[in-house]
Length: 625
Image (cartoon, rainbow, N blue to C red):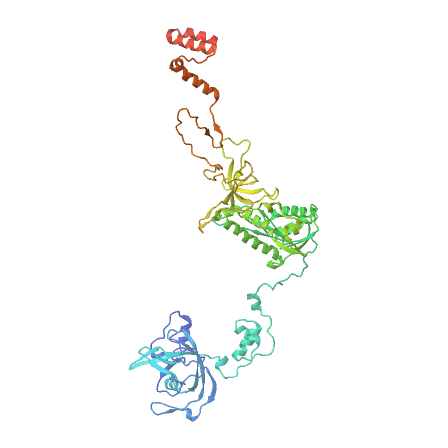
């Protein structure tokens, strides 16, 4: 490139305002202007000159607001020769520092064009007359006015000293407030493209601020905008359909979500969570399945139970996922013959199925809160999350709402009464010992196991709870529970939260002598301990042996249950008789033997006295045995 004298190259007459320096600015990450005198001929290099009275340039490009020069605009050079000027105007460009970094836009006024000149001269004298303060050091010259600063930081050495210059890249196409030249009118589409595709209203406002003249006409649909800005259409905040008013005809909002297993954690069982929400009462129903298609048949069974109970579902709002299409086919099949109208929401428009979508968020938040309050570790949460979400769903039915002027819980609005468990509510995550004894339980085995309360057995009486055994990962549905009045996980190690014991007034009244076997209640007389899984509900006093003086009654010894330990009367009589007879009587005491035993001992005695007659004795023993 150095051998070619092309437009914009150093030392060439540029016709388009370009330069080799500008090309280098665009192509290099680290740039410094070359410290040689050839760069002075670049049309964008301006030499700081304190002797010049006006700004002069030898290049025409970038001029605007032009006027013809008069004889008074002639420039007298140092040799006394007057150079004739051709034009006087303004020149707008972008200032750059010595590293090529853009600093801002500047407009030079009253710039004189000298066709016979070779360099661009920047008049420092003219700027000082306009209020600019001149300063400098050995590395640069600067002009300061208020917060504005012009820096001539391009140092170019000469044989006798140093020149300081500034790089101002000329704007060949002048637009906006920096020019007084009339700009041709452009159509709004062109302005839309140049302003990076804003809206039509913003295009018109920006064009007015920049002084552009727009041709008549509206902005047509832009292909680039439709491709790059594609988004969902606005969804009405209020649905157009009328909510179900007949309490015997329900409209259900149905959706299904999946809870994924952690990458390196335990596997989530039955991860597909199906939610159904009644539009009229907002009551919610949660169920969990291994697969999404696995929810089809149980959903049909639930719809049939509602129909038999006088709650026929006439409308179901859901998306058109594969499992939902299969549900419609099953409902319309000859096996079920439901008269249900399926209303599918549009793709990527969850707002049309808002009740089900909101139910996921509300129930999941409450389920996580239950597990957080119970201090359940994260790994354990993947085992009990379904029970927490199910309990949150049941408790949501106790929310009070007003329908047709009647204020009651959602259960009352739905089926006329509350569920059975409302009179036996416990705190989710509470510890309790469940009776596990059966007829085949060994006598030395534990009669119970300590479990965590994770829900209510809705198919049983209200006082029947679902208790999770972490040891076996099994669930007991039982009413025989001794409540520990604390959480199963007493402390959250991550948050270091100590949970105080729980005492519910009216349910956990601590009154003496209330412990009954099999009732599930423990009184204050019991001392609750937890060692090896065994529970002890009685206080055991220490056993102390005290010497008893003569002629005083012996203190009775009692067992833990309060029973008096008393030896049998016959044994007492025999011991007393032997003590009265003395040692002689004791030595002549004989053990009572049967006739066969006496014969056996006599024979053994004879064998000891006559060891050579063993064979004869053996024959005689045969008759005895």
